[in-house]
Image (tube, rainbow, N blue to C red; front, side, top):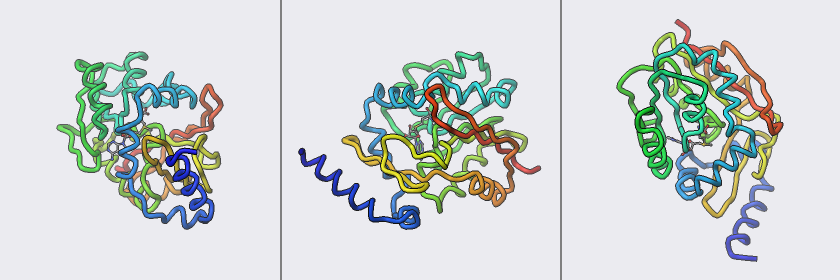
Length: 242
Ligand SMILES: C[S@@+](CC[C@H](N)C(=O)[O-])C[C@H]1O[C@@H](n2cnc3c(N)ncnc32)[C@H](O)[C@@H]1O
C-alpha cells in the first residue's frame, strides 16, 4: 500500500465516524476543491462526465426550451466546456460568457472557443460581468461544491448575474442518490483522489426552494431526469419574483 493510499484509508475511517449532521457542518470550503480541478487531467474529467451520462448534453437539451430564444448566457463554473460544446451543437446563437476558476480549463476554453465565448478566469463569487444576462447556468452539481450553510449565498450570487426577467438553471444529482465513486453519508460526500480532495453537499428540493424564497426568487419548474447512464438528476428552473 502506498503512502497516498494509507492516508486515504485513514481519511475514509475518519469520515465513517461522522454523522450526517457533523459532515454537514464539517469545516471545508469551496476553495478546498480547487486543487482537485487544477490537477485532474481534462480527459479524466471528460470521462467522468461520460460515465455520468452528461457528456452528450442531455441536461442542456432538457433545459433548452428556457435557453433557445435568449441573447445572453453565462456558464458558471464552466469546466472544460461541456455545456458550451453542447449549446453550440444544438444551435444556440446568443452571446456566451464563461466563468471558471481553474486555469487549465480556461486555457482549453480560450483555445477551443475564442470566437464563441468570453472567458473569465476567476472565482465567480468575486466576478462581475459587463452586462446582466438572460440565462445563468450552474450545471453538474455546481452548488453542491459549497457547504450547506453557504449555498443560499451562492444562489444569491448566481441570481445577481441575471436581468430581472432572466432564468437561473441549476442542476444537481438527486439528493436521494449517493454520488458514485465518493464516500457519502446522507447529503454530504467527499472524494479522495491523487489530484486532491473534493467535498460536496447535495441540497434537497426543499432547501433549494428555501434559498430561492430568501433571495426573492422562486422555482418555476423542476425537471427530474435520468441520464443515458441511468443517473437520477434534477434541473431547477428559477426566476426572480418581479
Ligand atoms: C463538476 S465541474 C462542472 C463543469 C461544468 N459546469 C459542466 O457542467 O460540465 C465544476 C466546475 O466548477 C468550477 N468551480 C468550482 N468553484 C468555482 C468558483 N468558486 N468559481 C469559478 N469556478 C468554480 C470548477 O473549477 C469546475 O470546473
